[in-house]
Image 1 (cartoon, rainbow, N blue to C red):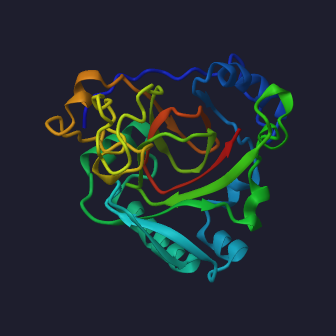
Image 2: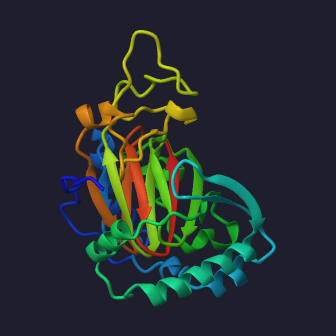
Length: 293
């Protein structure tokens, strides 16, 4: 894996209190970054909300949501090769429970985040993993996690209050969201486990390749090669953890240095629209996010 400069993300001048859904503090912390469209790491964003205590339990999910609830799961080797497969939620919970047992035997549960990251780098797997990704958060647990009110009502001078989606991300160690950008502002909320996020600033040439991989006439590919190899226009073809510089020379030649942060339980990350980001789970992980404008 390439060595990334560890650029620190900006954090608020004052620490958010250990109180869930303190709207004024959250809004005051986020507003400058929202206005400048720069990422912001929010430690302890979730405070003592119910999700912090309950979402770590497989049995809680069974009881709250039910085993016969249909979901779609991404199955693949952790990159753009994943296929979405329908299954029942109970079947996925059984899979997750088995993986939790394996993780508890193979890895030290008291590891610090930097140790978890090193372990993941040295033990990259070549087998399919199942990731419950980009599923709408179940209505039965929606009140477990505090969604900032300005995402829904446009208060505090942050956005227009148009909440588009509240999503759930659940999976074992080694799950990955490839490098991509979203057209909406995003708050990622980490509930269980640790995740590493790499962020790259927006690129004016993000449409340099059409969907399907054909280059736009008269333009050279941008460093991210978005749209190549059949990927969507907002998804990079480059595996940034193991880049093929012969196939993607612009990534090495002109790719910007990313910001890097590791999110733990209760942390939040504001990702402005069009910022590129790559996300990897360092252990069994449950997250939620909101896309709003």
